[in-house]
Image 1: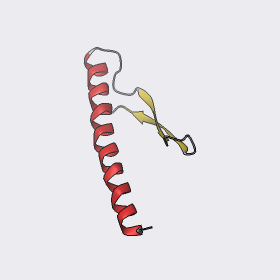
Image 2 (image 1 turned 30 degrees about the vertical axis):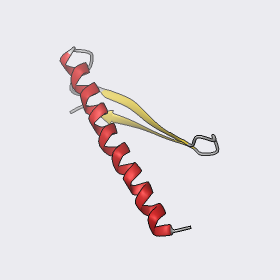
Image 3 (image 1 turned 90 degrees about the vertical axis):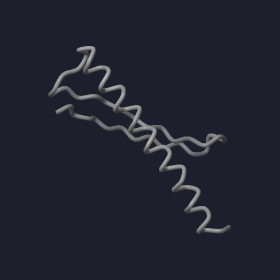
Image 4 (image 1 turned 45 degrees about the horizontal axis):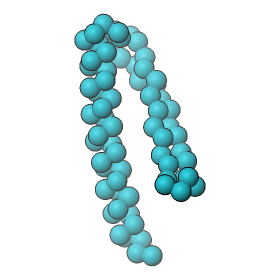
Length: 68
């Protein structure tokens, strides 16, 4: 296996995930804030699930974002 190529492919995937996820979270929070559903001082729980097509890979990250 070409380790360098694997590293590049994973990094391309993670870059796409990171950029698109940040955009989606920001848009969600801005809309919720504008609609009055959240305010400064509130927290929002978010999670990210990473899975493989065959189901062998399953990894979750959970985080609480504080709105300031």
